[in-house]
Length: 507
Image (cartoon, rainbow, N blue to C red):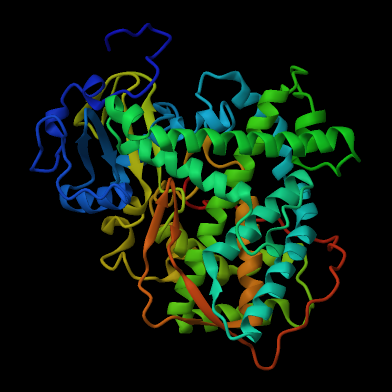
């Protein structure tokens, strides 16, 4: 690769022709237009869904080009499984992820592999997602969900439908803010989204737009959008700085993530996170810790409302496992096996972080067919990986939580279910998200019957993450009524370990 040294790769976007010497062997759309590329039929608002459509037509590896940017996409289970090999491939920070670096810098999600702060932050923060730490977050998750059900009870009593994505965003923002950083955004007391959410969504959508705008024209076409993004980023930074300053100058926390960032040294080197890196990690957790989980909950509620037979089965499990306990203890959440399958099946169809990029550590050959130079990369399209008929059968669009029955999971090949990414750089907070989402679904199923709008057809909004667009539900209170909201009980002393989401799947 021209312009590289043995130890460094060029920064910025690397088009596929630089890393794939036999690129012509990879299929592409048939109607490529000179200078602009594969733009026929493209919708700039839904680039991911466009790529899913193209991938279905062209097969498990294909390429697309737009305004000089050529990208290789992979979705076949065999090739994706190969790219999960940590000895040959590593995370590639590119496209929308790299576009978020002005916001999150070298935070856990956006750090380049060679940046030392990733390993430092990972080692310092990993204990914050241990079983003991997870149990300590449980009571706060219950309290925040109680604020949601108070709101939903009011909407139901008034005969109004609930805004599912909007309310799930409030729920998950408050959960990560309060459990991780001791901060209350007051989301449920607001009639409009908190400005942090508005700024965050703006930054995500700006990063998404940068993927599809021609680089030479971006300064002209996105001048006003860039000014808005600068304002959004400045607001995110100020908000986080205020949270950190309040902790430094105010009462100590209770061992949450922010305490760990401020007070914990690396167990081997003694090194600590710098103030700038703490800001970046807090922003990373506030964004990633609520945006993807809110989408996952929203999709799951959509499918439960559309499939009342599945909702009834999940609700029966909640009644059986939790009984008349006013609020479930920590260990009771992991026992909702079918509810968890509902969540997994929702993540199969619409993984809210829908793609991840992998780059070759050394020169290699993918699938025994496609040579890759060191640093060559491809984008793994998770929604298509999760729809590979060789793995999931002919009806890959059908919603069937029994795909995640233990025997079915054991029978599947490794690396075929990847809603949290892969390898060492997979989502550090996946157990937090899964516990929170399973708990919330259980509580909502126990309290409400969900009625969809008969006219609604699922539309998926893209802002780097995925979210159902315009999803509302009507609520009926269960009869006999579910238990009223009680005081939060003490956390049980006897617990059982939560299972890894990919245990038994070779990860």
